[in-house]
Length: 320
Image (cartoon, rainbow, N blue to C red; front, side, top):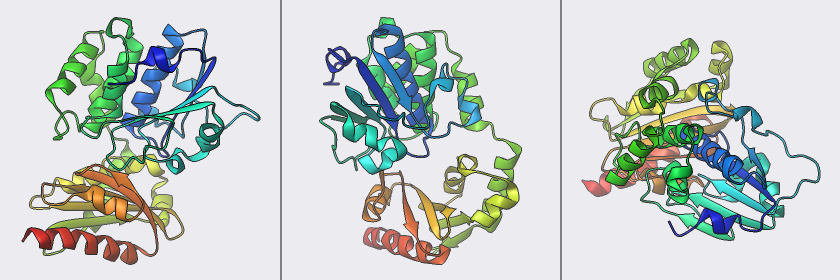
Protein backbone atom coordinates (compact mmCIF):
# COMPACT_ATOMS: atom_id res chain seq x y z
CA UNK A 1 0.00 0.00 0.00
CA UNK A 2 1.65 3.21 -1.15
CA UNK A 3 -0.88 5.57 0.46
CA UNK A 4 -0.42 6.39 4.13
CA UNK A 5 -3.64 7.51 5.79
CA UNK A 6 -1.77 9.88 8.10
CA UNK A 7 -0.29 11.70 5.10
CA UNK A 8 -3.58 11.68 3.21
CA UNK A 9 -5.53 13.42 5.97
CA UNK A 10 -2.70 15.66 7.15
CA UNK A 11 -3.94 19.25 7.36
CA UNK A 12 -7.52 18.29 6.47
CA UNK A 13 -10.38 19.62 8.55
CA UNK A 14 -13.24 17.94 6.68
CA UNK A 15 -13.31 14.53 4.97
CA UNK A 16 -16.12 12.81 3.09
CA UNK A 17 -16.29 9.11 2.23
CA UNK A 18 -18.44 7.67 -0.55
CA UNK A 19 -19.02 4.42 -2.38
CA UNK A 20 -20.77 3.17 -5.48
CA UNK A 21 -24.50 3.10 -6.16
CA UNK A 22 -26.38 0.09 -4.79
CA UNK A 23 -23.57 -0.58 -2.28
CA UNK A 24 -22.57 -4.19 -1.69
CA UNK A 25 -20.89 -5.73 1.34
CA UNK A 26 -17.38 -4.63 0.38
CA UNK A 27 -18.48 -1.08 -0.36
CA UNK A 28 -20.31 -0.73 2.96
CA UNK A 29 -17.61 -2.54 4.91
CA UNK A 30 -14.73 -0.48 3.52
CA UNK A 31 -16.59 2.85 3.88
CA UNK A 32 -17.75 2.16 7.41
CA UNK A 33 -14.44 0.65 8.48
CA UNK A 34 -12.53 3.74 7.36
CA UNK A 35 -15.22 6.02 8.78
CA UNK A 36 -15.01 4.43 12.23
CA UNK A 37 -11.22 4.53 12.22
CA UNK A 38 -11.15 8.22 11.28
CA UNK A 39 -13.76 9.08 13.91
CA UNK A 40 -11.80 7.22 16.56
CA UNK A 41 -8.24 8.22 15.65
CA UNK A 42 -8.79 11.67 14.12
CA UNK A 43 -11.64 13.21 16.16
CA UNK A 44 -10.43 16.69 15.20
CA UNK A 45 -11.44 15.99 11.57
CA UNK A 46 -15.08 16.22 10.64
CA UNK A 47 -15.76 12.98 8.76
CA UNK A 48 -19.01 12.13 6.97
CA UNK A 49 -19.96 9.08 4.92
CA UNK A 50 -22.37 9.12 1.96
CA UNK A 51 -24.03 5.93 0.74
CA UNK A 52 -27.35 4.78 -0.63
CA UNK A 53 -29.67 2.51 1.37
CA UNK A 54 -27.88 -0.06 3.53
CA UNK A 55 -29.68 -3.42 3.97
CA UNK A 56 -31.00 -4.10 7.46
CA UNK A 57 -28.72 -7.13 7.97
CA UNK A 58 -25.62 -4.94 7.61
CA UNK A 59 -26.70 -2.34 10.15
CA UNK A 60 -25.07 -4.27 12.98
CA UNK A 61 -22.00 -2.25 11.98
CA UNK A 62 -21.57 0.54 14.48
CA UNK A 63 -22.70 4.04 13.47
CA UNK A 64 -24.49 3.08 10.24
CA UNK A 65 -27.16 5.50 11.43
CA UNK A 66 -24.65 8.27 10.68
CA UNK A 67 -24.67 7.48 6.95
CA UNK A 68 -25.93 10.40 4.89
CA UNK A 69 -28.26 9.81 1.95
CA UNK A 70 -28.46 13.43 0.79
CA UNK A 71 -25.98 16.26 0.24
CA UNK A 72 -26.26 19.20 2.66
CA UNK A 73 -26.73 22.51 0.87
CA UNK A 74 -23.42 24.27 0.26
CA UNK A 75 -21.28 21.53 1.82
CA UNK A 76 -17.68 21.33 0.54
CA UNK A 77 -14.97 19.01 1.89
CA UNK A 78 -11.20 19.32 2.01
CA UNK A 79 -10.90 15.67 0.95
CA UNK A 80 -13.26 13.18 -0.66
CA UNK A 81 -12.24 9.50 -0.50
CA UNK A 82 -14.22 7.21 -2.78
CA UNK A 83 -14.04 3.50 -2.05
CA UNK A 84 -14.82 0.46 -4.21
CA UNK A 85 -15.91 2.73 -7.05
CA UNK A 86 -14.61 2.48 -10.62
CA UNK A 87 -15.61 5.88 -11.96
CA UNK A 88 -17.14 9.17 -10.88
CA UNK A 89 -20.56 8.39 -12.36
CA UNK A 90 -20.96 5.35 -10.11
CA UNK A 91 -20.74 7.55 -7.04
CA UNK A 92 -24.33 8.47 -7.76
CA UNK A 93 -25.81 11.23 -5.61
CA UNK A 94 -22.49 12.03 -3.88
CA UNK A 95 -20.62 12.78 -7.14
CA UNK A 96 -21.05 16.59 -6.77
CA UNK A 97 -19.22 16.42 -3.44
CA UNK A 98 -16.37 14.58 -5.15
CA UNK A 99 -16.14 17.20 -7.90
CA UNK A 100 -16.16 20.12 -5.45
CA UNK A 101 -13.69 18.68 -2.91
CA UNK A 102 -10.31 20.31 -2.42
CA UNK A 103 -8.61 16.95 -3.03
CA UNK A 104 -9.86 13.55 -4.10
CA UNK A 105 -8.64 10.01 -3.52
CA UNK A 106 -9.85 6.67 -4.89
CA UNK A 107 -9.16 3.32 -3.23
CA UNK A 108 -10.36 0.38 -5.29
CA UNK A 109 -9.54 -3.11 -6.56
CA UNK A 110 -11.46 -3.15 -9.86
CA UNK A 111 -9.29 -3.60 -12.94
CA UNK A 112 -11.72 -1.40 -14.86
CA UNK A 113 -11.06 1.59 -12.56
CA UNK A 114 -10.26 4.71 -14.57
CA UNK A 115 -7.96 6.32 -11.95
CA UNK A 116 -10.20 9.37 -11.93
CA UNK A 117 -9.16 10.93 -8.61
CA UNK A 118 -6.20 13.17 -7.74
CA UNK A 119 -4.68 10.26 -5.79
CA UNK A 120 -5.41 6.69 -6.87
CA UNK A 121 -4.67 3.43 -5.11
CA UNK A 122 -5.94 0.80 -7.52
CA UNK A 123 -4.85 -2.78 -6.78
CA UNK A 124 -6.69 -5.21 -9.10
CA UNK A 125 -5.10 -8.24 -7.43
CA UNK A 126 -6.50 -7.33 -4.01
CA UNK A 127 -9.37 -9.41 -2.68
CA UNK A 128 -11.46 -6.41 -1.75
CA UNK A 129 -11.39 -2.70 -1.07
CA UNK A 130 -11.85 -3.54 2.61
CA UNK A 131 -8.51 -5.37 2.57
CA UNK A 132 -6.88 -2.29 1.00
CA UNK A 133 -8.34 -0.11 3.75
CA UNK A 134 -7.03 -2.58 6.34
CA UNK A 135 -3.55 -2.20 4.84
CA UNK A 136 -3.77 1.58 5.28
CA UNK A 137 -4.44 1.44 9.00
CA UNK A 138 -2.19 1.01 12.01
CA UNK A 139 -3.04 -2.52 13.19
CA UNK A 140 -2.90 -1.80 16.92
CA UNK A 141 -5.34 1.12 16.54
CA UNK A 142 -8.08 -0.85 14.78
CA UNK A 143 -11.06 -1.14 17.12
CA UNK A 144 -13.45 -4.04 17.30
CA UNK A 145 -16.16 -1.97 15.58
CA UNK A 146 -13.82 -1.07 12.71
CA UNK A 147 -12.69 -4.72 12.48
CA UNK A 148 -16.31 -5.92 12.13
CA UNK A 149 -16.90 -3.62 9.17
CA UNK A 150 -13.67 -4.56 7.38
CA UNK A 151 -14.17 -8.27 8.01
CA UNK A 152 -17.64 -8.12 6.46
CA UNK A 153 -16.24 -6.35 3.41
CA UNK A 154 -13.48 -8.91 2.89
CA UNK A 155 -15.80 -11.86 3.48
CA UNK A 156 -18.39 -10.63 0.99
CA UNK A 157 -16.03 -9.90 -1.89
CA UNK A 158 -14.20 -13.20 -1.49
CA UNK A 159 -17.40 -15.25 -1.40
CA UNK A 160 -16.53 -16.13 2.20
CA UNK A 161 -12.92 -16.81 1.22
CA UNK A 162 -13.84 -19.16 -1.64
CA UNK A 163 -13.00 -17.02 -4.69
CA UNK A 164 -9.64 -17.07 -6.45
CA UNK A 165 -8.93 -13.52 -5.23
CA UNK A 166 -8.42 -14.96 -1.73
CA UNK A 167 -4.68 -14.95 -1.10
CA UNK A 168 -2.62 -15.82 1.99
CA UNK A 169 -2.47 -12.11 2.83
CA UNK A 170 -6.27 -11.99 2.73
CA UNK A 171 -6.59 -14.77 5.28
CA UNK A 172 -3.90 -13.18 7.43
CA UNK A 173 -5.83 -9.90 7.42
CA UNK A 174 -9.05 -11.74 8.35
CA UNK A 175 -7.25 -13.52 11.19
CA UNK A 176 -5.90 -10.25 12.57
CA UNK A 177 -9.38 -8.74 12.45
CA UNK A 178 -10.80 -11.74 14.29
CA UNK A 179 -8.20 -11.22 17.01
CA UNK A 180 -9.95 -7.93 17.75
CA UNK A 181 -12.71 -10.01 19.30
CA UNK A 182 -15.22 -10.06 16.47
CA UNK A 183 -17.51 -13.03 15.80
CA UNK A 184 -16.52 -13.85 12.22
CA UNK A 185 -18.85 -16.81 11.75
CA UNK A 186 -21.83 -14.80 12.99
CA UNK A 187 -21.03 -11.91 10.64
CA UNK A 188 -20.84 -14.32 7.70
CA UNK A 189 -24.06 -16.10 8.66
CA UNK A 190 -26.10 -12.94 9.26
CA UNK A 191 -24.85 -10.86 6.32
CA UNK A 192 -23.98 -13.41 3.63
CA UNK A 193 -26.01 -16.59 4.05
CA UNK A 194 -29.14 -15.61 5.95
CA UNK A 195 -32.01 -14.57 3.66
CA UNK A 196 -35.42 -13.08 4.30
CA UNK A 197 -38.54 -14.91 3.23
CA UNK A 198 -38.93 -12.48 0.30
CA UNK A 199 -35.33 -13.07 -0.80
CA UNK A 200 -35.89 -16.82 -0.80
CA UNK A 201 -39.10 -16.39 -2.77
CA UNK A 202 -37.26 -14.34 -5.39
CA UNK A 203 -34.43 -16.87 -5.54
CA UNK A 204 -36.90 -19.70 -6.06
CA UNK A 205 -38.68 -17.71 -8.76
CA UNK A 206 -35.40 -16.88 -10.52
CA UNK A 207 -34.30 -20.52 -10.49
CA UNK A 208 -37.64 -21.76 -11.78
CA UNK A 209 -37.69 -19.21 -14.60
CA UNK A 210 -34.03 -19.66 -15.57
CA UNK A 211 -33.00 -20.90 -19.00
CA UNK A 212 -29.82 -22.38 -20.46
CA UNK A 213 -28.27 -20.89 -23.59
CA UNK A 214 -25.07 -21.17 -25.64
CA UNK A 215 -25.14 -24.97 -25.81
CA UNK A 216 -26.12 -25.13 -22.15
CA UNK A 217 -22.88 -23.44 -21.09
CA UNK A 218 -24.63 -20.33 -19.80
CA UNK A 219 -27.59 -19.89 -17.45
CA UNK A 220 -29.84 -16.82 -17.48
CA UNK A 221 -32.64 -15.49 -15.32
CA UNK A 222 -34.35 -12.15 -14.83
CA UNK A 223 -36.82 -10.33 -12.63
CA UNK A 224 -38.98 -7.48 -13.90
CA UNK A 225 -40.42 -4.51 -12.02
CA UNK A 226 -43.78 -6.28 -12.14
CA UNK A 227 -42.25 -9.34 -10.44
CA UNK A 228 -40.62 -7.13 -7.81
CA UNK A 229 -43.91 -5.39 -7.13
CA UNK A 230 -45.66 -8.75 -6.73
CA UNK A 231 -43.11 -9.94 -4.17
CA UNK A 232 -42.88 -6.47 -2.55
CA UNK A 233 -39.13 -6.59 -3.12
CA UNK A 234 -36.37 -4.03 -3.65
CA UNK A 235 -32.92 -4.08 -5.28
CA UNK A 236 -31.20 -5.34 -2.11
CA UNK A 237 -33.40 -8.45 -2.23
CA UNK A 238 -31.58 -9.53 -5.40
CA UNK A 239 -28.33 -10.17 -3.57
CA UNK A 240 -26.94 -13.66 -4.04
CA UNK A 241 -29.18 -14.77 -6.91
CA UNK A 242 -26.49 -14.61 -9.59
CA UNK A 243 -24.07 -16.53 -7.35
CA UNK A 244 -26.62 -19.30 -6.86
CA UNK A 245 -27.22 -19.51 -10.61
CA UNK A 246 -23.47 -19.92 -11.13
CA UNK A 247 -23.49 -22.94 -8.81
CA UNK A 248 -25.40 -24.88 -11.49
CA UNK A 249 -23.25 -27.73 -12.76
CA UNK A 250 -21.43 -27.26 -16.08
CA UNK A 251 -22.26 -23.55 -16.37
CA UNK A 252 -19.42 -21.36 -17.60
CA UNK A 253 -21.35 -18.12 -17.11
CA UNK A 254 -24.38 -16.99 -15.11
CA UNK A 255 -26.38 -13.91 -16.13
CA UNK A 256 -28.92 -12.31 -13.85
CA UNK A 257 -30.77 -9.11 -14.64
CA UNK A 258 -33.42 -7.15 -12.84
CA UNK A 259 -35.38 -4.13 -13.98
CA UNK A 260 -34.53 -0.89 -12.19
CA UNK A 261 -36.73 1.29 -14.41
CA UNK A 262 -38.92 0.63 -17.42
CA UNK A 263 -36.76 -1.40 -19.81
CA UNK A 264 -33.59 -0.55 -17.89
CA UNK A 265 -31.77 -3.51 -16.36
CA UNK A 266 -29.01 -4.04 -13.83
CA UNK A 267 -27.01 -6.97 -15.20
CA UNK A 268 -24.78 -9.17 -13.04
CA UNK A 269 -22.33 -11.71 -14.46
CA UNK A 270 -20.43 -14.58 -12.83
CA UNK A 271 -18.03 -16.90 -14.64
CA UNK A 272 -15.66 -19.82 -14.30
CA UNK A 273 -12.22 -20.07 -15.87
CA UNK A 274 -13.09 -19.64 -19.55
CA UNK A 275 -14.77 -16.23 -19.70
CA UNK A 276 -13.49 -12.87 -18.46
CA UNK A 277 -16.74 -11.10 -17.60
CA UNK A 278 -14.91 -7.87 -16.71
CA UNK A 279 -14.23 -7.38 -20.42
CA UNK A 280 -17.89 -7.92 -21.23
CA UNK A 281 -19.00 -5.48 -18.53
CA UNK A 282 -16.49 -2.88 -19.73
CA UNK A 283 -17.78 -3.30 -23.30
CA UNK A 284 -21.22 -2.26 -22.07
CA UNK A 285 -19.97 0.59 -19.89
CA UNK A 286 -19.69 -1.28 -16.61
CA UNK A 287 -16.85 -2.90 -14.72
CA UNK A 288 -15.78 -5.48 -12.23
CA UNK A 289 -13.51 -8.48 -11.98
CA UNK A 290 -12.54 -11.38 -14.21
CA UNK A 291 -15.14 -13.68 -12.63
CA UNK A 292 -17.65 -11.17 -11.27
CA UNK A 293 -18.81 -8.01 -13.03
CA UNK A 294 -21.86 -5.94 -13.88
CA UNK A 295 -23.37 -3.05 -15.79
CA UNK A 296 -26.66 -1.38 -16.69
CA UNK A 297 -28.33 -1.77 -20.08
CA UNK A 298 -31.50 -0.42 -21.67
CA UNK A 299 -33.82 -2.53 -23.79
CA UNK A 300 -36.15 -5.47 -23.46
CA UNK A 301 -35.11 -8.58 -21.56
CA UNK A 302 -34.41 -10.37 -24.82
CA UNK A 303 -32.42 -7.44 -26.21
CA UNK A 304 -30.17 -7.51 -23.17
CA UNK A 305 -29.74 -11.28 -23.20
CA UNK A 306 -28.97 -11.34 -26.92
CA UNK A 307 -26.38 -8.58 -26.67
CA UNK A 308 -24.65 -10.10 -23.65
CA UNK A 309 -24.71 -13.65 -24.98
CA UNK A 310 -23.04 -12.52 -28.21
CA UNK A 311 -20.09 -11.19 -26.24
CA UNK A 312 -19.91 -14.34 -24.12
CA UNK A 313 -20.01 -16.51 -27.25
CA UNK A 314 -16.99 -14.69 -28.67
CA UNK A 315 -14.92 -15.79 -25.70
CA UNK A 316 -16.35 -19.29 -25.50
CA UNK A 317 -15.86 -19.87 -29.23
CA UNK A 318 -12.35 -18.55 -29.01
CA UNK A 319 -11.64 -21.14 -26.34
CA UNK A 320 -12.83 -24.02 -28.53
